[in-house]
Length: 101
Image (cartoon, rainbow, N blue to C red):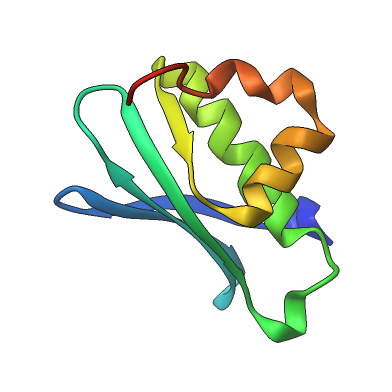
């Protein structure tokens, strides 16, 4: 289940990812680029085959939305999975960048 996941942020320069683990086992990642102060370009979500269908992608998405809210960041989304979630949960769209990014 997604409730027992540990999600952390790993960054290397302007590149970053959220990483979901259960214990020592990698469960999934959500990749982003920093595009200046307070702006993220979300471009890919990846869930390990053995974790698919267990809510890992949704946990990463929700964590990203809450992180953006806490830090006052705006997201430009290029990830099809995340777009599906933004469409499904319109209450999360407050973190989306409007207009030019």
